[in-house]
Amino acid sequence: MGRDEHDVTIMTDGRPSTVSEPSPAPATTRATDRLPDRTPGPVLPGEPLRLMCVHAHPDDESSKGAPAMAKYLAEGVEVMVVTCTGGERGDILNPRLKDDPEVLRDMTEVRRREMAAAVEVLGVQHRWLGFVDSGLPEGDPLPPLPEGCFALEPIDVATEPLVRLVREFRPHVLTTYDENGGYPHPDHIMCHKVSVEAFEAAGDPERFPQAGEPWQPAKVYYNQTFSRTRVMAYHDALLEVGKESPYTEWLKNWEDREPRPVHARVECAEYFPVRDRALIAHATQIDPDGSFFALDHEMQRKVWPWEEYELGRSLLPWPEQVEDDLFAGLRADVEAPDAPGAPA
Ligand SMILES: [Zn+2]
Image (cartoon, rainbow, N blue to C red; front, side, top):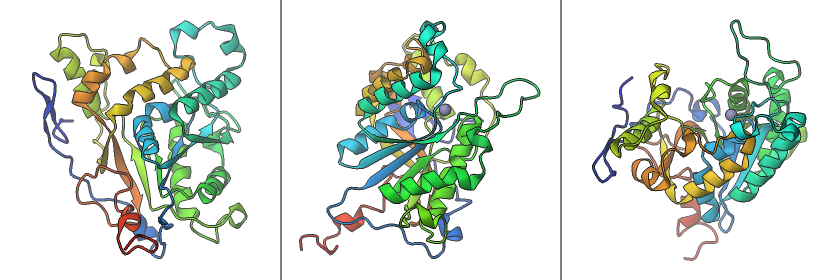
């Protein structure tokens, strides 16, 4: 795989000199093909825009998209994080807590507390869907998934509580992962499935009629935070200033897979410190000396000051170039001078 998708060349002062925009790939499943009669829920004058970010388990909301959420919150957007499972089967990834008796005794409770701390840092609204972590199966052959876990739930059972939340919170935009999960954890893949299913079902009065008044979000984006291009940019930046890169092995073993298209790039470097504080709140899941923190904020701001998103579904015209806002195409209703209730 080459780097020609969006090649970042680092100049001596660290600024990316050439950031050729990735051209959005043609969409394979535009919502308009599947939902021809669906109109997105309105953006009413005087009401805030609303963003719902659906994640598999605690810590994903901090590692993927957190600085963009913080930026939108600061602009007055309402942001709700939805977490599908409790992360009960997560490994302890912080070497300092490997033998911690409390963590070993009650991972479920520890992760609930960590999540509460991260939510406090981020300032978002938060809801649990209440499903049980499927764990990351390892071995050859892979063991079967544990009974009762999220990834084994029938799709309607797994989708209903999310439809209920979409109808209650009425987001204009949803975020989730791509169909590969971004990383092949069964709960990441299931998170994609239920998010897309909820996007299609929440506006349909015939589906889940007991789960509230229909509401149709306008689009679904997939987090594309961990692209090879970004890791490569971090790697090059470290080598450029003569530091060691923790990404060498990672890049060597990177699967040869097609790069994902990018449709939105949200500048949010100002909020990288918030993201890091939220990440560290997930103490069992993050090594404070690990590769997450290898590049300082100043350097990150220079080489990669944004979060990237792929558009998965949209009821709006498909963008022809990379946009800088997840609400692109939705703000006009609020700002148009002839919008009802707007000053003449
Ligand atoms: Zn995850």
